[in-house]
Image (cartoon, rainbow, N blue to C red; front, side):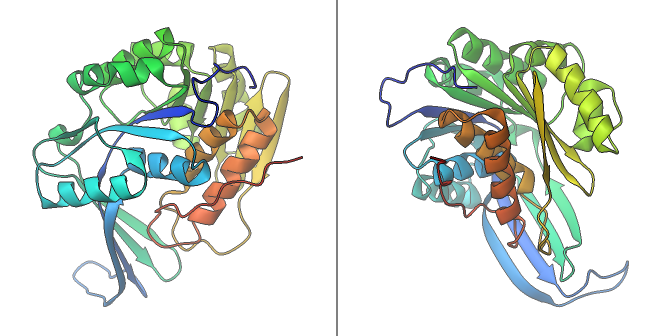
Amino acid sequence: MDEQRSPESPQQPSVVVVGHAARDLVLRAGSLPDAGGSAAVDERIERLGGKGANIAVGVRQLHPSAAVALVAALGDDAPGESGRREAVAAGIDVSLVARRGGTALLVDLVSGEGERRLLEHVTPESQVTTADVDAAEAALAGAHVVVLQLQQPADALVRAARIAFEGGARIVLDGAIEGDERDELLSVAEVVRADAEEASILAGVEVATRDDARRAAEGLLGRGARVVALSVPDEGDLVCWHGGERFLPHVEQRVVDPTGGGDAFVAGIVTGMLLGAEPGRIGEIASQAAGSTVQRLGGHPELSPPVEEG
C-alpha cells in the first residue's frame, strides 16, 4: 500500500470524492412514535450531509494538508447554497459541485437508545451525471486518490473510474453496484469498502459471520482489489489483503447514532493511504474514525488527525 504516485507537492496530496451531497435534518426523541402517535423532539440539527460530502469533510479533518474536491450536485436553492458554504468552510473545493433543481433531503430520526429511522428524498437531479464527471476530468485525472460512492448512476461512476485509472489515481470503491459496471469498477479499484448487504451484492456471498466476510473478501481480492474492508454484523470490520487480514471490533461504548460511521471509515481509509500506512494500520485508522463518529448525533464527522506511529 506504500506504492503511490509522487505528488507535485508532498505537503498537499489531492483527493476527489464522487458522491452524494444533501441537506441533513437530524431529529432526536426519547422514543420513536408508533403509527398514529407523536413524540417531542429533544434535539434538532440541520447541516450539509450525504455520503460523498461526509467522506470529503472527514478526509479534510483527518488529513488537513490534503486538497479535497467534491464532485456532487446541490440544488439551486437556499439549502443548496447553505450546503455549499458549509463545504467551503470545511476546506472542500466545491468548484465541481453542480447546482440544479432542489437539494436532496435526508431525515435521520434517532431515539434515545440509538435506534434509527432514515427518510430520504433523493431526486434524479441530485445525482452525479456523466456531464458532471466530464467537467471534473482534469481533477480526476490529476488526483492521487479518487473515491467513488457507488450509490450514484453507473454510467457516471464508470466514466469517472476510467478517467481516474488512466490518470494513475488510486481508486476506492464505497458501497455496491450490480451488473457489468460492477466488474469493470472492481477491476480498477485498489480498495473496496462495503457493509454486509453491499458485500453480498459485490461478491455473491451472504455475510453474517467473520468467515463469510473472509470468503467475500477473498473473492473481491481475486477480482483485482488490493485491500478489502467488509463489515461483519454486530461484530466489527474485517480488513483483508493478499497475505494478511486484521479484524477490528466495533467500539464498546454505546452507539448514539450509527449514521455516518461508514462514511468516516472510508475517510480513514483514504487518510491511511495518503500516509503510506500498511493495510492493517489503514484499517485501524478507519475503525477509529468510525467509532468516534457514531458517538455523536447525526453522523457528521468531527475527527482529528491520527497519531502517526513511530
